[in-house]
Image (cartoon, rainbow, N blue to C red):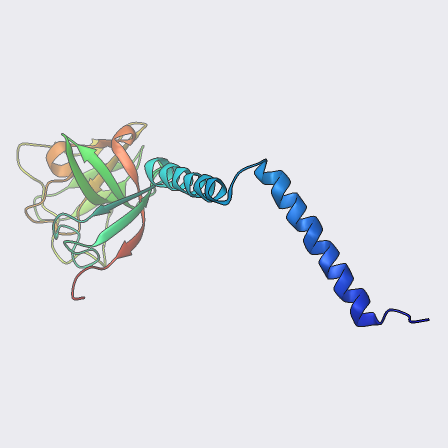
Length: 192
């Protein structure tokens, strides 16, 4: 009598497992053709992408050089839409007066900001030394009055290029409901 070898036994087990897997796949498809199954998988993928990029992650380009040298004009910014509680020094995307801006959070609720005529930024009585900012911070005459204490749900945002930019010195504090999200990644487009 011929006894089955170990290889034949292993091969029959593999064949049996493949048959069971194929049957389970067919049950999952519930009578769908290969094209219908593929179309359903593509549809699920598109829905996941829509939810991800319409409600969780946003992508925009930097419209100008107001955040230079950290972010340059034309760079792609990926931002997290669900973070509506920024911390000081976070870079955020926000909309004010129907215009999209990108800026750095300088102060959060409860902080008192003062910008002096000699170009000093004072937060909660302490003069700030900003190592990444290469220009003095002067107030814009006739817009925001100082000292300014932020209320709940407000933050003070300035752009890194402090001369000639529109930021909280121009339009006042930014309300949290005007924030679109916190920047999580910068993809350089310049010098490619």
